[in-house]
Amino acid sequence: MLHTLLNIQDKRDLLAHPKVGASWEGFIINQVLHLASDKYEHFFWATHSGAELDLLLVKGRRRVGVEVKFISSPQVTRSMKIALEDLKLNILYVIYAGEKNFSLSKKIYAVSAWKMLEGLSL
Image (cartoon, rainbow, N blue to C red; front, side, top):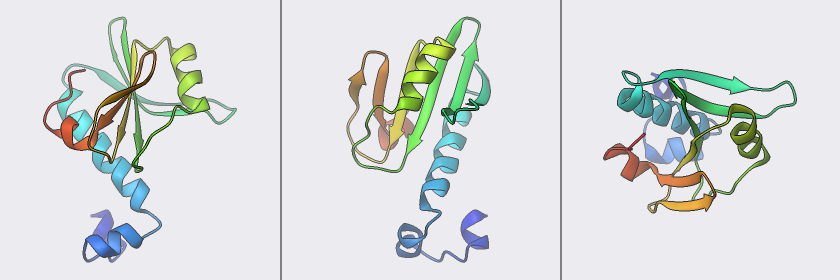
């Protein structure tokens, strides 16, 4: 629906549009919720100082953070560090547009969106 409202006709239009990142984020969050919403409560989280987390998944004491980035090589951000500490996350996934899964730091993992669509183990 977003692409129709923005008059995006094809992949070329999408990749050139300033809202490509928002489109990507919405799509990926929708997919994660499809995989996890029956198992986890889900929230958006932000602080007054500007730190935010795209998706917080909670089940009992387990807390999983999800950040979505339309980039090819993700990096750990200040917001991620704050979210890990403030929310006491067990793990934080950075779902990105690349093809490999790898560790960014302790408890923070870059996850290929394509591999995630095959089944992310939350």
